[in-house]
Amino acid sequence: MHTVTLIKGDGIGPSIIDVAVKVIDATGVGIEWEEAYAGMAAFERFQTPIPDETLASIEKNRVAFKGPLTTQLGKGFRSINVALRQEYDLYANVRPAKSWRGVRSRYDDVDIVVVRENTEGLYAGLEHYIGQKKEIAESIAVVTRLGAERIVEFAFRYAKDNNRSKVTLVHKANILKYSQGLFLDVGREVAQRHPDVEFDEKIVDAVCMHLVMDPSQFDVIVTTNMFGDILSDLTAGLVGGLGLIPGANIGYDAALFEAVHGTAPDLVGKNLANPSAVILAGAMMLKYLKEDQAAARIRAAMEQVIGEGVYVTPDLSKESKAGTKEMGAALINAMEKQS
Ligand code: NAD
Image (cartoon, rainbow, N blue to C red; front, side, top):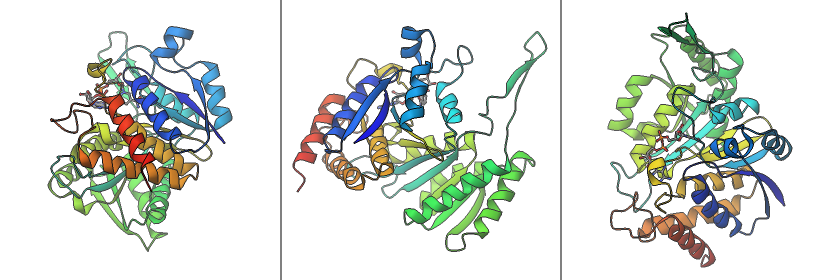
């Protein structure tokens, strides 16, 4: 039996997490879900976006499964997502984008994993105004040797563990000679320790163009925090959108699994949100918990249901008449019929 901290989140979070929990439970893996609150949902109940009880639960269980959380633009409390990643030193953010049969997209053979540094860079939270009039603002990008080394090492280990043959380090060292320069220098050193995996380095703006024109040249991408955030939305667009992209936030001894997408305020209460991203995040969590067979069953059910294109949410098929709940039911049905 595993105990997992469950944070349903804001916006579409509770609706997609409820479906995902049913699908994960249908694998038969014993999981005790310990519900905790964060974000707006926590603020409304406890007047804080991250109650101590939530931190204590993650501290104890070391594995969390969460829905998206609202972060107000340019005001209000700081991003709880960023705070959680820093609190538990979840330094590696893994965001796979794979083409699906049955989903219309520009390419049908994309298979790219973005490995994003998750605790430093421009998202380190070091920001301030200079002067009283708010006419100058500074955000500081932090790159450390330790941070660069462990994320590039993670990317190479991930490549080996998952039978992948190439790691591309993405940077902007031609302009940001210190912070990005350090990331690139350390990355090159780490690459020398892994001669059995092909290594490439590319500048981020060129990568955007190459990803759109020929994504087949990419396998594992490793990059700094903000570039990884942006590039993983780009790779999502190559395979049918954010509704299909899970994310794992991994540290030395803790991990948090979620979708890449946000709270989708435009879809709340409409039974239209695609639950696939959080369900795939659930499959990543099962692999992390060494329940590989259960993860594979979920993946196979998704391939079947998405491939048939009937019980899928409208973002995946214009002809679809199904919603979040119907897609979840179809996945459970497909799993029950697996031989
Ligand atoms: P968003 O990801 O919520 O939405 C972007 C677009 O993608 C919208 O058109 C939305 O309808 C669509 N979309 C998102 N999820 C979908 C799904 N499951 N199925 C179908 N379509 C889906 O991004 P946003 O609008 O920029 O952000 C909304 C809020 O979410 C903000 O407060 C933001 O800070 C927060 N956010 C949270 C996380 C997180 O908790 N990890 C991540 C990103 C954004």
